[in-house]
Image 1 (cartoon, one colour):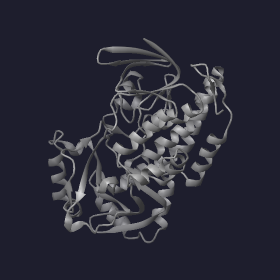
Image 2 (cartoon, one colour):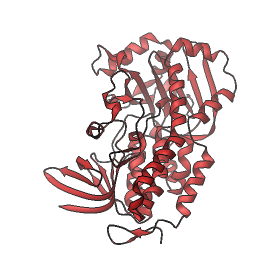
Image 3 (cartoon, rainbow, N blue to C red):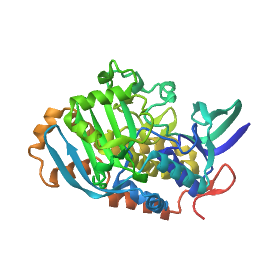
Length: 407
């Protein structure tokens, strides 16, 4: 069977689902492809930065976060071996699990008209086609545009010959688990995200919906020798090494049976257009999780890409120019914050150096400076979202024969 669409989006995380929702809202026929079924979990800090919220407000999703009890996070606390530094965030953020957020975003895309291909595996891709399979059934999707939103690591990265795949010196691995507070620790504050330093890595701790706390870490692969995926023993080792981590973990009890771990996380440059495919989210560039800006960056990349794809659908002859324009806009929006995130990660991954730096950290000035360097301005994202939703440009004939663009 063959299906014709305007845009095929591979991956229904924050970047893919938001991109599909925006394009479908403007009338494009969009296939949103996700190999798993919702709700499903992901390794993530589950901190939704304030600069993601303007677009979610326009998609009417902030009320859903409120309904599900997604906590508001107003402060950040950096915890070293012997010192702490706490500061107010410039704007309130939210704590929300990927189980909840990804499901909400996927359903929103479908409600806007995206065609759900949930539970289908993309077996092969080209610039204008995707081959899918599920339980012995096969479908070919012909698309005018294919967008890759499969995250930090996917088998198509190797197929496309992306350079970062071959890098073994900079491989990191993420791990996370949901916890509940021990009764004696019920008075712990809910509106703070904590960042804990450890050798060649770090941990993030913040509350999410349902009275749960997410503890998520990232470590260089060299720290995992001898553990072979046994995350319980690795965390026990960390607790023995770092008294602050022992204190933190002792306040919680696991709410999930096992740890969830990631594929390799490699902080190397990647291009936002590869082999004629437009990349979004982590597939286009990875920011250090410590910034708490990964989900926001994924959502913003979709907002950046959507109007360009609408122009491409309106005039396919502009493809080369639009690919170049996206690459330039993507670099301008994200490259500085990725560079800053690497600098901060270098400090947070060295406990002694962090303690020395925390000697001079006072008030909100330093924290506010670093936060602003690792994310977009709230008002700037709001303006970008307003332009998209108020624009009447980009009216073309979709693959289904309907005009692309608001009626």
